[in-house]
Length: 491
Image (cartoon, rainbow, N blue to C red; front, side):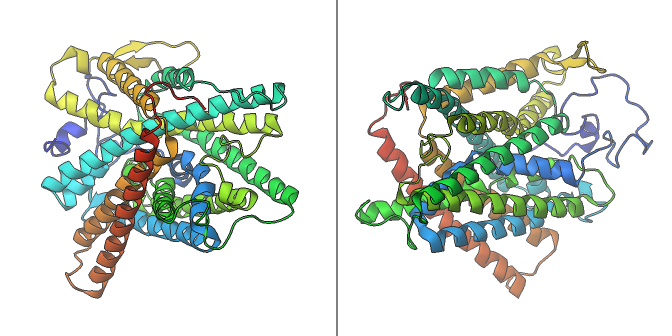
C-alpha cells in the first residue's frame, strides 16, 4: 500500500485513473502535448459540466429521500439551518481539498491521482493507511446502501401497482431479495466499463434522473400540503409523547448523520478532479463545479426535506417516495421510483470506480508478470468504433465485489440507520479532517495563527457532530436488530 503512487514513471504507463488501459504495447511519443498531459497520460477532457454531473450524481443520491424524515426529527428551525450549515462546510472543505490535487504549485505541481495520493504527498506515514481504509470502507458501504435503496424503489413500483389494483385492501407484502439480485446483475454488467473517464455519459443520465425524482417528490409534497389545507410540522420537530425523550435525542442525532450522508462526496473529489482538462488550472474548474453542484443540491435538499415535512409533519416516512406517504397518482410514483433505480445504477459506478482502480493497480504492482492480471484481449463490439478491452482479473474481481455488496444488502436491509452510520463515519475524517490538515501543510499555515485556530475549531465542531450522529445511528441499528431475520426482509 505504501508503494502506491511513488513510482511516477510506472504510473505514466497507466491510462488516466486506470491500471491497464494502454496494454503493454509501445506507447506513442509522450512529449506530443496534443495527445498527452504534462504527466504523460492521455489528455483529460473533463469540463466544469462533466465534473458538476459527476458531483451531482454522487451527492444527490438516495440520501435526498431521507431528508423529510431528518427534518421531522429536527423541526422547522433546526432542520433547514443544519442543512444549510452542512452545505457550507462541504463547499468550503471541498475547495480546500481541490487545492491539494497538485502538490506544491497549484498549476504545475505533481498531480495526485487519488484521495490517498493527496494524503500521502501532504501528510504521509500512518495517515495514508488510515485514510485509505476509511475511504474504501466508505465507498464499499455506499455501494451496499445503494443496492438497498434501489431494491426498495423497485419494490415500491410493484407495491403501488398491487395497492392500486386491490383498491388499497391488500397490504402487498413482498420480499426485497429478488430486486436486490436484479440490481446486482445490472451492476455486474456496468462494472465492466474500465474507467471513470468513460462513465461520464452514465453520470449525466443519472444526474437527469435525480432531478426527475426530486422534482416529483417536491411536487407531490406541495399537492399534499394543498390537500391538507395547512403546513404540518412544528418548530422543534417530532414531539415528546409521540416518541420518548431519549428516543427524541437519538433520532435527532441520527438525522444529523442522514444529512451528513446526503452531502458526502469528498472521498471521490480528487478522482473527479483527475478527469478535468487544463488550462484553466484544475482547481479553478473544480471550484466552479463545486459551487454549481452544491448550490443545486442544497436547493433540492431544502425543497425535498421541507415539502416532505410540510406534507406529513411528524409522520414523514424514512424514504419519501417509497415510505407510502403518497399513494396516488400511482403512475407518477412509478416514474419517480424508476428514475431512482436508474440514478442509483449510475451512482453505484461513480462510487465503485475509485475502489476498482485502487485494487487493480495494487494487483498490477504486486504481480506485474501475471497474464491473468495484466493481459488485455481486444473484443470488437458491433456498433462501437473501438474494441472492448477484456481483462480477466477485472472481470472476476469486479463481479465478486458486486456479488458481495448484493449479499450484504440482503442481510442488512434497514436503510435509514445504515445511511446515518455511513454518513457519520465518513463525514468528519474524509470531508473535514484530511482536507483541513492537507491544506494547512500545502499552504504552510503557521501553528496557532488565527487561520490555523479557525480551521481547527471547524474540524473539532464537525468531530462532535460525527460522534453524536454515529451514536444515534448505532442506537437505531440495535433497535432494528431486535425484530430482524436475515434474508427475510419484506416491506
